[in-house]
Image (cartoon, rainbow, N blue to C red; front, side, top):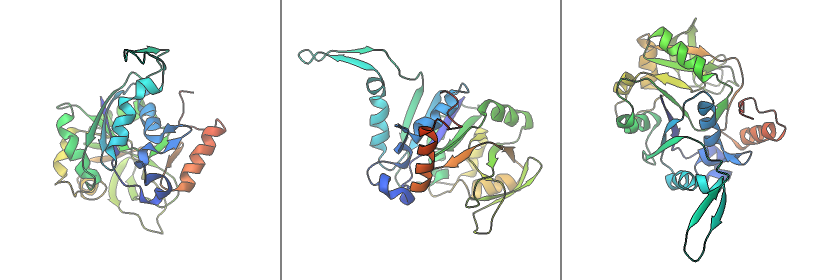
Length: 257
């Protein structure tokens, strides 16, 4: 099973960091938050990734091109140019990085990489800037059991995200955020059937609008209720919160530690 990760946005609310690097490459505990997201999936056996890059995509490409060397011990012969790797601590992941355009919207990014998905196989889809102790195995099993086109992970963080109306595990409607909203919100960590791509019109399509709204309207969007930890990294304050949890060895999503 593949996991598609959105990693192409500007991250304007974290401009202190993102004027030089894309937001998913902002580090938490010495590793990009994108790495943390991938590690969550890898801990549940999903190690085949498609990264939808865009803004400063070269930073993401360079990171993974040099990942093995950066995480291992090296011996370099400067005369011959030969390189030996010792104590290889690299991950056993397959990572495809696709430049999906600097200005492409979230739905458009998924449409752009759809040709690299496995035909007829469900896939995971999430954001490259939010972490949680989501049980990915349970999430995938839930999705396969209900048979609908899409599963969204729903969480209960501060009320500043798109609001979900639920009837049990059925998402009855999805709408953009409002100041007065409370209740379950879109935490990402989707599992999707390939057919959802047909609901995306083009590069300007925002995944959280027409595609999710139409899935909900057709009764094809189910909610996997996550009552544990979930935290996006939208602002410097969010980054500092996550950094503090890692520093105190209290990061709930880091189940591999």
